[in-house]
Length: 162
Image (cartoon, rainbow, N blue to C red):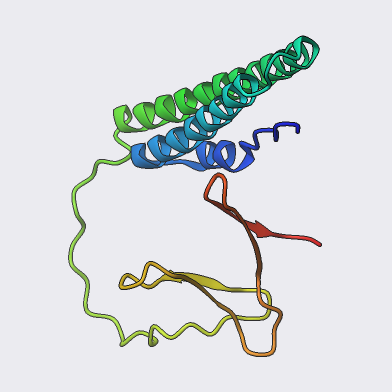
């Protein structure tokens, strides 16, 4: 049995596009949770190998390689978080988020209804708060979006190509 590689692409993308502290914290927590889960899996895997020294050595080397990759990913993530933090601090210091409110304008015309009319290929996700079920809504006659659920990690993946 080999251990799966850690995929932090979504978390790194979240860091790169984060604009607010809570987004940065959420991306950090998600990435570190993945790293922790992978490390715990690797430790459990090694602990259960038994007395086969060669298998233990091979697994230890593999775990060390994965730990090094995880550390590299975590360091890169930390650099990304620091860049986002510094960017926000610079923007706050420059007064980008300051400003007096403008004069109230006249009311505008009544807006469109909140009904979603997606085009082919578009979909929306919504959560039923009563049941905790997640639903995907997509246009009639179009292909439903494809998802894969990883029961070990609890991650839901959107499949973009077959």
